Length: 239
Image (cartoon, rainbow, N blue to C red):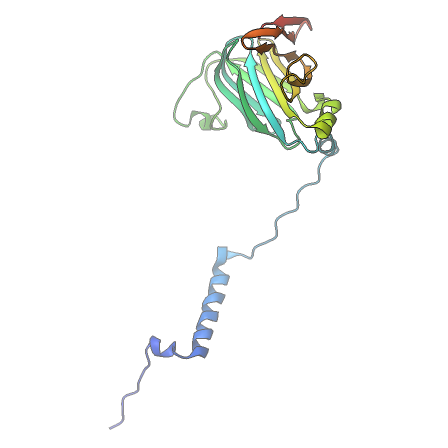
């Protein structure tokens, strides 16, 4: 009687080094063919910078952000600040003078935003995903009536002399914002050691539409000031 045909099991087949190698190669080829259903392509090259962006890149070389200081001259509700690309640069539910200032850090492609768009309202509303439903960034405020809606230039106003001094002698760059009922005010300076500034403070190259008061140990050593957005009048403040 003929012996029945012996069919080796898979463990026997894998005992051969050659068969194991062929099996591994076949599995690898199969997985490569199934990877995401298509051949990967190289990333598209970045678009060349515009002449304006090239100029800003040269102007702000070495600066990628700084400290942000925001306050207001009146009570502001639901403040949103967007950059030139529509990203939410800053947001706050309520700012109140004189002690309602907010300080934080920020980053920007060319050192500071090209433009900033401001909006504030008479009240804010809250609902689940309310901002996203309105096409706004998740942290943006919404609701009520818009009381202020302004777009102002920023990068073009920063003096070259400040940037050059920072590259040579250091210091922390500060971008400052003060909300006025007739429009936002923009300011800037460099922060160094206490007593190194021309007025005895720690701030150099202070400029723009306003400068906050210099207060030391609760005493106003130098009054602040701002330029009225409509009249151009210079007005002093104690904060």
